[in-house]
Image 1 (cartoon, rainbow, N blue to C red):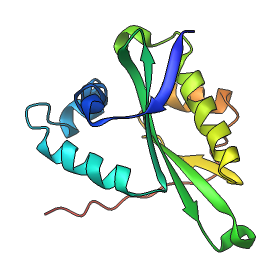
Image 2 (image 1 turned 180 degrees about the horizontal axis):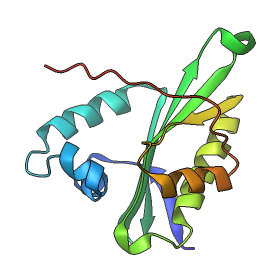
Image 3 (image 1 turned 90 degrees about the horizontal axis):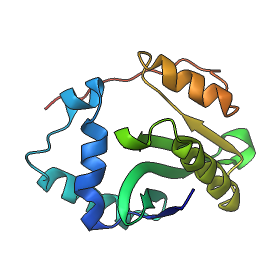
Amino acid sequence: MGIEIRPASRDDVPAIVAMLADDPLGAAREDLGDLHAYDAAYDRVVADPGQHLVVAERDGIVVGTLQLTVIPGLSRRGATRSVIEGVRVSRDERGTGLGTELVTWAVEESRRLGCTLVQLTSDASRTDARRFYERLGFVASHVGFKLALDD
């Protein structure tokens, strides 16, 4: 496909935020006008060795992203698991197989890092995303809960 998946750099932050904002849910959550909070978040992410923020690049243009978090734990006999978050593909690349390539990369990277389980969540309103993840072999085995901690 001519895609390179690589660690995200600070210069990639505006493109990542633009992809995060480019849907009805993200448009209500993200603020493209002030990237300072995103730059600070980028610094926290790259300082944590358990975090792997990557971008997919085609011809020098960032066209996809995801964050892979590796979590050591005691459950499942001391298993290490990974969590895939923030999967986004630019509007022009949707339907090209790039999402599959990104998630497949994350699963293989999880294996390489010694994880025995890969998990993710997707907003309940994203029915297409649910079908996409199920097609890749993910099973909707749990019900997720969130609690917003407002300022």
